[in-house]
Image (tube, rainbow, N blue to C red; front, side, top):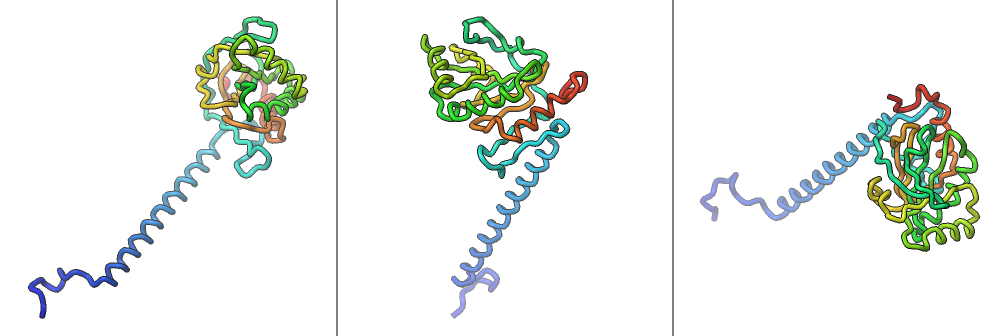
Length: 227
């Protein structure tokens, strides 16, 4: 006995419907995979256009140790003139470092990744620090014991090349838009942000040394981002 429906409107048998669902699922997976591949290629294309100084090398996510990835901006970015104090209590500001490249590291003694990477920052300062470059390790420890905490940590970790800088107000972290600790900014001679790294890194690695030396070797009249 047949139904009154035209043949083309008859419901498909169960096996046919099951095969159709499988085909739809396979198609959806293929589309999703294609989208992921396109997004990955777009990201790689953007990275390839990121300018770095001649001779500089930047490690990618496949590098060993701390998997250092420094996000260098296409154009330098203006920064607020944050204020803080040095280890003797003298008032300072970011613009006091104009004329040299700065690696500004925002950290705290209670931050485990900060503590872990601090010796590498100390070695970087010992190797490249001078009239053209300085590592500015800016602690955001708060309270009357903040200076003592930093001094004790430096002593226990044998940190000898880094100066002490303190921002007990925590304003630097907020004004710099630090999404977490540690946050490290590479700043040019005009006080503009060239790039940043959020999280742990091995700052005395060959990749970092090459990157910074590439900037230092650029003539002051023709440095990256010069306006």
